[in-house]
Length: 90
Image (cartoon, rainbow, N blue to C red; front, side, top):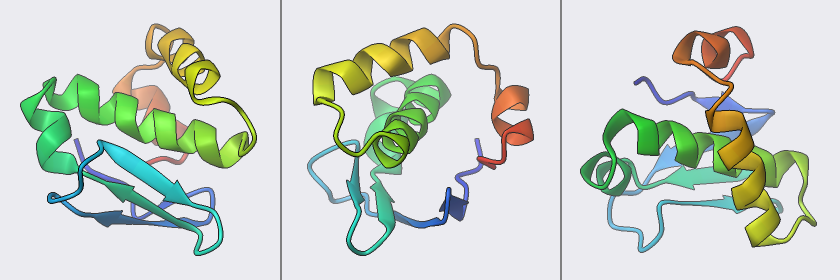
């Protein structure tokens, strides 16, 4: 899966040494993804989930983490890679 260069105006960076799968910095408008960790622990599916998770943080910056996780769980059953491309994530 190709990682998008931007998600809703936020620049996307890769940091494979980061502790987490991903993080969003609203002040800098940057999303950082640990691609290596995502691929190692779940392949393309985990990478897609990480991207959707960070996108949800962008769209709902005040949403609690558990609610973000629930939202992504709902979306992962409805979203194919083609849907992601159409919605402008890739």
